[in-house]
Image (cartoon, rainbow, N blue to C red; front, side, top):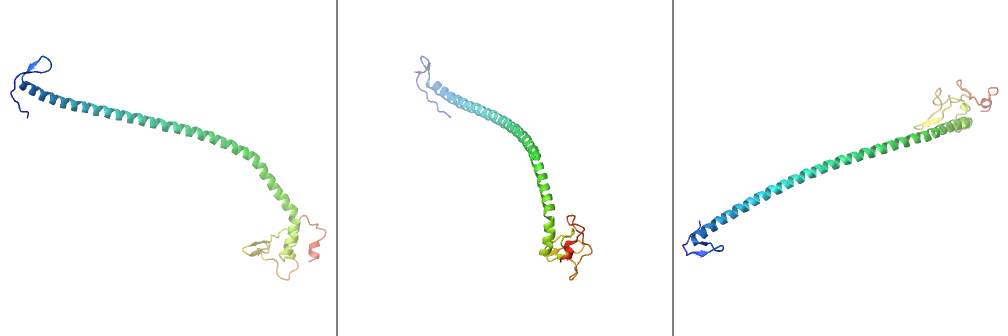
Length: 184
């Protein structure tokens, strides 16, 4: 509470004469007005800052959404472009690789047929299966350390047999002479 003292008149605010009592009352009112005005400005400033932050956040969110949409659009375009180029490259590779694979398969087949007389003659001798020399059924491969001679005689003919009842000559061996059977 403001204390009021009675003083003589004095000139305040130009030519206006007021008593000290009136001046003190007016100063108290001015002080209350100032505080009210300050809080009012502070509230308005808080509201303005709040509105600014909300608008800023909306704009930032909108920009982020637009950026995400733009990024997805670019990613789709890149994916479509790359996918179509990869498909084209794949087709070109198929056009180039397929004939090469066919040529390699043909070469292997021809090489196998060309070397068959040698392998069907030498391998039985080297694997100690002389009865099997020149037989079209001879397999002569080892599986887990066990020799598989042929389907009819997986372990070879019985020891001491000089002929095989299932022996069939290869087409490359002349049928008129049985050269391999005569020379054990």
